[in-house]
Length: 279
Image (cartoon, rainbow, N blue to C red; front, side, top):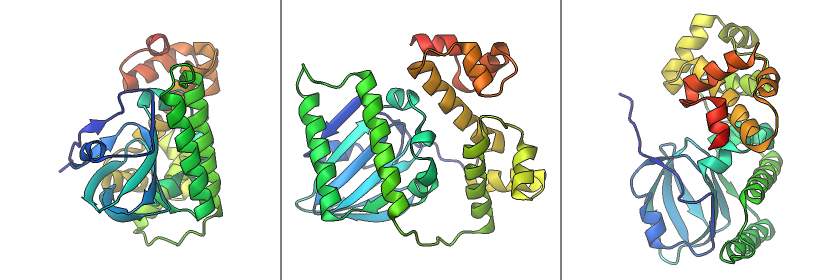
C-alpha cells in the first residue's frame, strides 16, 4: 500500500538559522516528505532521525543534505543538541537545475544523506550559515531571489565536491535497486534529448518490460515519471531564471514545438509554461 506522507515546504524563499530549537524540530516529529532543500549541520550533541525510512544517528560534524522528495522524521533528540541550517523553498529550487549543480554526486546524496566533515570544513559551513543568518535578519542585506538561487547553487556545488572526495562504500543492493540507480544516471545524462523508455532499456541492456516492471516495483513510479521529473525541473529553472522564449526552451529539451512542450508541461505541472513564468 502506498503511503502519502504530508508534504512540507518552508514559509519563505530562504531561511537560515544557527541555533535550532525544539519548536523547529517538532515539525518533523511525524514523517513528512520535503518539498524544500535543507542543509543541516550538527555542531553539538546528537539526534536520531529517519531519512527515507532509514535510521541515522547524526553527531557533531555531520552535514545532512535533504533533497526534495526525501522523507524525514526526528526520532530522538539528545541533550545539548545544537544544529545550524540553511533551507531553500520549492519555489527557489524551481529556479535552478539541481542536477547540473550536483550531477556527479546526486545519487550519492540520495543514498548517503549524512556526510561527516572534518573540523575545519564544519567550521566553514557554520561560518557560512552564521553569515547568511545575520544577513537574513538585516532588512538592508536580506538576500533576494537571485542571491538565494546563487547561494543554493553554490552550496550544492560545494557539497558535490565534498561527496566526490569521500570514499564511498559499495552499498549492497538488489538487482532491481541497481537497475533503478543506473536508470537515474542515464536519465540525468540524456533527458534533454531522450524521453523514450526503449532508449533507456537499450542503454541498460534489458528488455522494455523488465525495466518498466522493475522500476515500478522498486520505486512505485513508472519510467516516464522519472524522465518527466528531470525534464520538468530543467524547464522550470529555465522559465524562472532565463529570458529564453517558450519556443527556445522547447527546442533545448528536444520538443518538436512550443505547443507540444506546453501540453507536456501542463500534464505534469497543472498549468502552462506561460502561467508558471508569471507566478
